Image 1 (cartoon, rainbow, N blue to C red):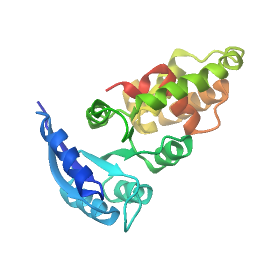
Image 2 (cartoon, helix red, strand yellow; image 1 turned 90 degrees about the horizontal axis):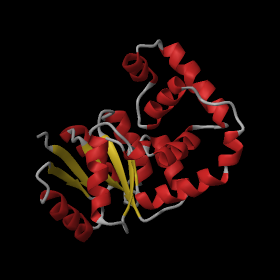
Image 3 (tube, rainbow, N blue to C red; image 1 turned 90 degrees about the vertical axis):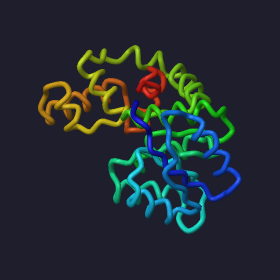
Image 4 (cartoon, rainbow, N blue to C red; image 1 turned 45 degrees about the horizontal axis):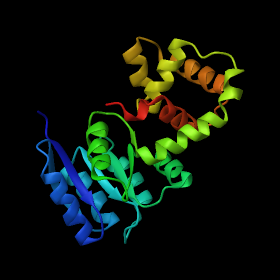
Length: 215
């Protein structure tokens, strides 16, 4: 069993201690460090190279969004799970753009965080189930319009799915035995057919399909 190395970045000591107790009860998770502000989180992510950083969005010195971008610059292989009380779409959109791999609400049950850690550690993406319900509602509202569009092919669907769970064009190409250019064409065609304008639309669609809850 591979043990997941986790760095906790949370400025409230009581919350941080509670998270440590929760994680240390798990046989497959090891807390390798803690950070009480954004700058410390970036420094420790670079030095300790954890598999996953649990990142609070509201921290001193450097906010969570800025810290997420910095972590991706200095330690691109490190996976990030954002932990916050904010449940509005704007935060999700900004964090997806910053390169975070999971989004968990502090008010959710502890299993949400544990599931997120395990999913992102395996290379997947994770969205809190409370937000998945909202994505279903949004998708249902536009379902009739999508049905009228040209059907997306199986290959285009697979490219879109791999994109949604975090794979680069090069990784998708290698996995499917295609050229990077062909992957880009499939991605463009799928987004055009579905009427998607950007990555956030792909993420919403992925939530509806259940792709963001896959390992």
